[in-house]
Length: 201
Image 1 (cartoon, helix red, strand yellow):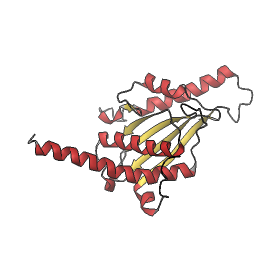
Image 2 (cartoon, rainbow, N blue to C red):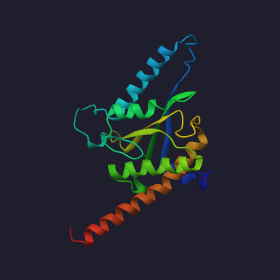
Image 3 (cartoon, rainbow, N blue to C red):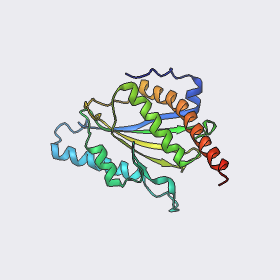
Image 4 (tube, rainbow, N blue to C red):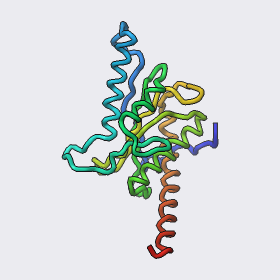
């Protein structure tokens, strides 16, 4: 299971927002006679919308460097890359889940690079606790007062192929992990800046 994570407390709730924004079911509750081909078209259309949203142009049409799609190890993914990463691991109950993560400004996650590192670390801690590796992709958005990460998590884990569910307990652990990893990201960034300044750059 990995190292336990301290339960969420009021500080974690106040400083890290984690919420599920929906999932796409493999079996549609209102279409009991849906064929396999119809199911695939429905799910693929939903994934096409979700991945396009990760990298969408802001409403005002202005360029926004924060709209790059990234995964656990790579940045600059194309939308097709993102779709392929998720569609290979549709689950038995949920094809995929959508989650939003957002750290409060007081945690010191300041830049887009910080946000990407923070998202990766936070999801990594939870996956270590579950002992499952998720197939996921994300995008950083700055179209609200608080910069946030939209994440798509496939419904089946990599490796063992476990059913991936998003429960209240998992969200609580994401919040707790997010506080811890934010401090780690800020410390790494500050140490990097110190090295640059010490070299007189």
